[in-house]
Amino acid sequence: MRNRNGRRRTRNGRLAVALALVALAGAAGGCGGSKTPHKGQAAELFKWDVDDTAARRKLPSDVVSALYALNIDATGIAYGADGRLYVMTGYLLRFDADRAMHATDISGGKSVDWENYGLVAEPGGTFLTVRGADVLRWRPDGTSQMVAAFAGTDRRAGTAVPASAPVGAVHAGHPPRLAGVRPDGSLVLVDSDVVWSLKDGRLTRLLQLPASGDKENPNTLMEGGAVNRSGTIWTASGPLHVPTLAGLRTVAPDGTVSRPALPARAEGVSEKPASLLVGWLADDGADGVYAHVYSPGNEYVLHVRPGSARAVAKNVHYPSLDCTMPHHPVDAMSMPCKIPGKLVYHAGHLVAAGGADYVLTLPLS
Image (cartoon, rainbow, N blue to C red; front, top):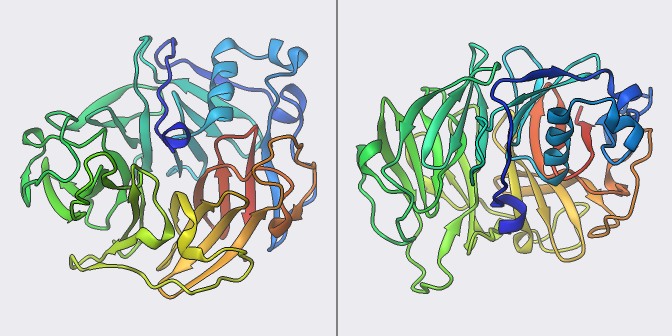
């Protein structure tokens, strides 16, 4: 699991280098055809091929680096105030309606061991993310400012934390992950075995997992989560950062912590839903989440609400990586290739990016 979501990479780059790609259809290997996908289908929204030597030579080196990073994974995804899709890696990537992509290098020109994790769009066009123990606000030009900083990231999972304290007085269990923002403007951070609310420089503990009693395999929360428009927080737990749907938890705006009921079986799913491993959760725009989940033999996107779960996409060849996505819409429940790991819901569509050389769109209505 750490290889999927907790990886560390070393990057060299220049700060705030905004580079425009030509349309991906011509310069980066083509796009996903002209047919519009309908409900129940999936299609490439963007496509690139940095292993195509001829295409790669047409691209600036920073853009090539950004695409290689996105092929490995993404660490955050959001739609900005401008209605455009943004994806976080070591770069802030913006996808435009004309099928062009812009990359802003946010590595700061340093060779360091960190990742920006989580991505929340703000109304003014800025973005929030976490780097190490710091919560940062990023501008599209690559400049940033500190919003808050934990005292450190050396707390052992299971160690008691205060109910409320200034953020600078609290040690995190590992680099905290930004899950989202509540309607009152408070940020939601997931820190090893704790869910925090951060507002006006002060942390409030919303949830701490009970100690497992196993120091070698502590019970921990997934790296991130989702926040519904009502302010309800969704996350999942499991040993050693390997969460399952059985470990789903919600935190309501009034502070009530619940374990959402799951059906014994789910439409379109071969396994028991509770047994599936969770890679990512995305707000569904209402009272549930879309979950990127997998088992040793299958990969799915599930729509999960309290008491219900159903598949909206399935990779029928998981875990095989030897495939090429067709340049036309396909049945979302018979995906021939990987479902990119990071999900965001926007305007009736689910979009997936990270860990593949394409961005997928799945119409849901």
